[in-house]
Length: 479
Image (cartoon, rainbow, N blue to C red; front, side, top):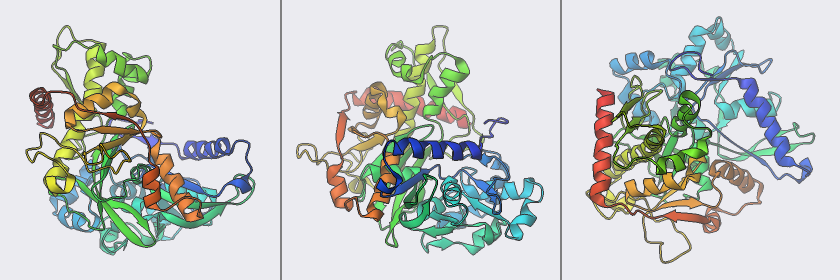
């Protein structure tokens, strides 16, 4: 729901109803007692506050894309708080994350702050809300990856931070217990018999697990409504010098693994805008074929900052813009611009990661960033094992045209797995790992299967010329 420009909300009851429907559909003709475990993956920064007595939310969920707290974040930044927040959380001071949205709910829903102080309310991201509902309110918990996206959690010490809670005026009684990503969370009777819930991770971390990015410096990119590039850095949290995020990749047996992450606020949502807003597409899957028919002489750029622009720019006030329009511009050129914007934004993120870590860590052959690849994927084929690669997943990767342009822009191979819904796969793996029906990470990595590898075919001078046009469009948008 979009109640006003920059505001994005979900109906919590829709989320709950659909989750239960999916559980029952997935069960099919099996019996609940045949299910080893349930895993949960979720939108990480979407904020809910609910009544502990009734389980009902006090306000629609405020979605990660929502920008209503941009001014509040700007005031805290002007007061000099961002460096310390980043040091403790690995995040930047932005409306994207939970803390400012949670504070907004407490201050704008009548009586909410007083009720929170009395311990009557609970806060959580979607995972915590679902876990509460699945257990009939018996368990209020989250996992470390979701906690790490709140701006309230010290990712180095592994606990909620009292100083940050005070800064955002958040009563500690609101907060869920933080647990490992795989473990015995609870049981649910929603399927008619007890079933264990044993896995939990934020969607992007779950996708990295589903992509078997267990070796340090492996990376994946997920393209759904937004786009998210996550690079596993192992036990070492890397502090970004180029406005990327340092976050938890997962936590297993109490041991934390870290990642660098770059966030693209608008990826598939740009195609949805073409379909629903402009009406130039009948269906989202038409975008690739339409883009392929675009006039190669026209250079149209879409900077899809509909809800601000994410890493590495982090401008909450930027808004979307189209550049290079002529009288000959039509639906095909707009479709191409929307799909190309995903590749350009990914290249922005890869460039920042290379600058943060250095070409040697990432396996990039050219320090000049003409060939910004990712780490050795560890695929079975010895003929390609030494190559740098980016693993991709999510709804947009079904478009061959988009994935080929992505490989062309990165100058590196792009690997699409057999199972593209790796977020669900990662949640299932965590649950199965805890239940003892899935193998350890090494065996899981060997089982990862490649569906198609997209090799770069564009000349470097053309690739860089196209990217220079994108950079100019972004500068104009930010300006």
